[in-house]
Image 1 (tube, rainbow, N blue to C red):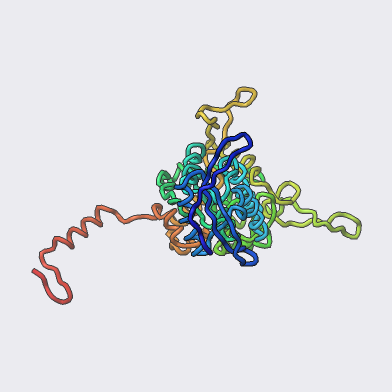
Image 2 (cartoon, rainbow, N blue to C red):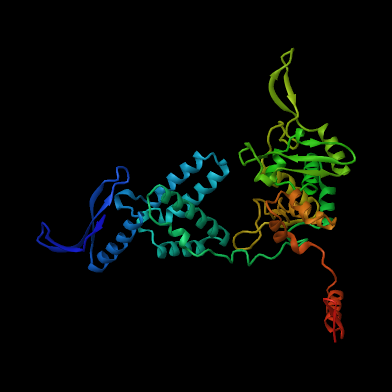
Length: 424
């Protein structure tokens, strides 16, 4: 492997115009056979040629050099990355999530660039453009997808360096978010009482289980009757699966997602009553008289007994019940003005999102003086740190005045005893 000194080349075009360029000849191993092959690259200036020769010498020594002919565009690298994600049998929602980032944000801005031309300043300019057009959270997520895309390209030998990882991470994305507050981010006990009093039909048992189990929406939709132990006075709910946005069943979000949650007598009796009314699913079989055999599968199914849609639960159930309970708020447009339907009636939505029931459940466990480790297990969090970071401010504190008084008394006592010796 060698990199020769840049040489100037001059030629005359067909129109008689004299042009010149700087050539850097070098040799690099073939990625398949390993044989050294002669290569060269042309530059308009001597300075650019010298910079390339120095950089290429180091890359060849480290075995990380990628010739232009082996590189590809960011858009092409994105296609390869998505194929690798699909090959790993990741959930459809995850693949769609990454595809959306590429289609809407990455390709329109830098998809045409070759990987070897994607420098740190260009990635920085890409991030600045994102930050000016989308939310901070979306900027952080798209930059994460770009890092994964470039990492996959690096493993394939399409680029020597993942410049996305060299970008400083934005650690301030969560600083503007206040801690969760009762009555602002999730309902208070009185508001939950109002909501459950207003809930009727199939929404009532769903919201009761959501409020007193802390299940995620996907876990609620995937809950089966075989996952329940409806015994009195205490029942049990086993989280063993969840449904994605397309109704496909899969494992819980993480290993910690597999958990068992105790159910109070109130929740058990609600579910026993609901089981008698729950829509049944056509099992695809026929009895002796040719009639379809039906059975109960999902605890909270749609009208045909199949998997329910998240949007239906949120819009037709959760938001509608909140509006009935007097907890609705007007829908606003991008300018912050109220939205109206065709008849001029203000559009309303619920005050809280469906995930707020999960926050309520955690606060309810804290009010019951449950140990932090027990709360982590019932919430399905991957670590105790995650539970305390998110909900630590909700735990009761000792009275600050009494605590400070005791500290001052201990500090200002004239005689202290340390290790058996009395200090005057």
